[in-house]
Image (tube, rainbow, N blue to C red; front, side):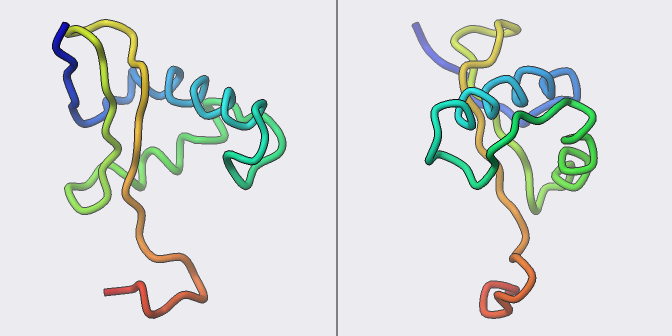
Length: 84
């Protein structure tokens, strides 16, 4: 079955948070130690709604629940070599 990769929509945010929280529960996968809420991630999501720093999701078929995601981010403060 072909998978589809597309840019994330706001309606995907709850599933993105659920997947992220699974990684937190597994341990050693993220720098977070406490589960996040959709509300916790709304600003993060809004900051990724540009072509420069998108969030991508993968689904097994169109309009099916997403099975994974990834995002591109701006450089992190203190790491100016990554700013360009």
